[in-house]
Image (cartoon, rainbow, N blue to C red; front, side, top):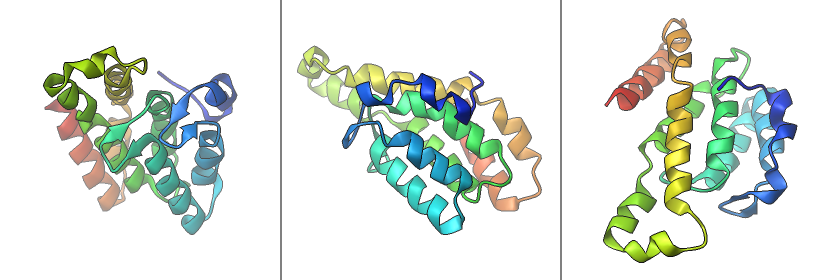
Length: 157
């Protein structure tokens, strides 16, 4: 699922939701991660995490649409928070909050919002671009390689 930040405009951010409501701020946050200095990028990634993987395990409608852009950012050596991006992708890949809740409370499956479907789509999106990990595992940055290895192991299991 190759994508580019220039494709941000192809996603209807204003008509999908994240944990705060409208997802229309996501492109700005992704651009800040891509182009900001270290403090700006980390702050933007923190805000992005709150919107697409709240509490580190609750995903929302906009999560799957955001994941390909996170993979792109993780590949770019100039991005200052690539390790944290991989940690976020791992959190998304591990998210089963809605599925777990729906198994205990099947009424959740009748909600107008498809929380379980959004969660599954987000996990599929992380798996779809896992080939990027080969490039990241060959990097010189030890911390980045460790984060990539952890994500690879999580996706393999």
